[in-house]
Image (cartoon, rainbow, N blue to C red; front, side, top):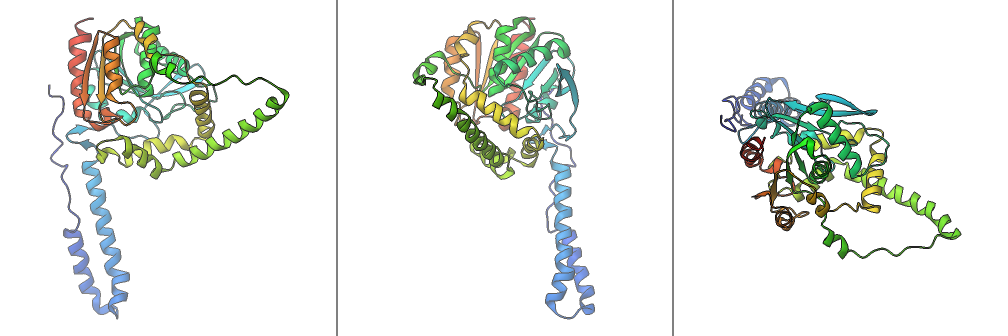
Amino acid sequence: MALSSPPPAAARVIRPGGNLLQGARWRSSIDRPLLQGGITRRIFIDLPLVAAGLLLCRAAYADTMAPHYRGLERLPFKKEGYNFWKWKTHRIHYVVEGQGAPVLLVHGFGASAFHWRYNIPELAKYFKVYAMDLLGFGLSDKALVEYDPFLWREQVAAFAREVVQEPVVLVGNSIGGFTVLHTASVYPELVSGVVLLNSSGQFESELKEKKAKPVVEETALRRLINPIQEWGRRWLVFLTFWQAKQPSRIRSVLQNVYKDNENVDDYLVESIVLPTKDPNAAEVYYRMMSSFMLRPSTLTMDSLLSNLSCPLLLLWGVLDPWVGPGKAEKIRAFYKDTTVVTLEAGHCPHDEAPGEVNKALVEWISAKVSNRA
């Protein structure tokens, strides 16, 4: 079976300026005697008809071309979501498609299951594919809890036990990569393989390079100042969140970390903007920032890789301005059962080069994981 198939014949570009616009000119020539003056005619007849023609052409173009990208089928975006699973008291959104060996896709910071839009339909031709929204992201609950790497590790592990119910290949991008590596290192019985796409996380040597902050003696004056600092920090983070959730800002950030900006489209922007409209979204963002920025985790890549016992695949965008190829080389040097595939992409290779990522995943899982099982 081919990994991807060409888009249907219906997916052809409808060029603006065709018959609809010719119809507008024809209509205006007929109605010309009814109105006096060229400006009046252009305002009330020509311009509305031309605008309608352009909108119809644009709508027709979007309807035929939107579900595909370079021959790859795209997961339809549903504002109401696909499936929901109850974890503790939280409602967790996920997508599932296909049959066969299970694969679980975990997104990065600020993204959601919809970020795997060009991977889910294609991989589902070979595997049973799950993609979940981490708590606080996507269509999952914006729970007012303390956010840290342990929370998401337990969420992924519980999903593997309760929903997947068999050893699964964990695939993660950015902070999702660190989450799946963390899960596999603690719960090896739940995992058959791990795939990291430009994963976050630091080695112990990198943490040691950072200067430790001096311990401030707790005094009465300090206890008085702390609440004021907390109040200022909260409003600064809220202001940052308000700026960060603007569609133009989201598009700008994505264009900075995507090598190919063709996929920085309305679908992607909307999938990120929609969760920010939740009433708890700003508070959740503040709690995440407080946790990860002010109290960075002491977990290191060294410790997690030392406890890993399954095959590891690195799909690395070498043009990533945040996590460069040097990180992939460090991981490969540390963990011997590692396969590395480099891609001419930025921070999100699964969305920038989905065809190459899908192909690499199918080949690696078939060779390293299926045979191992």
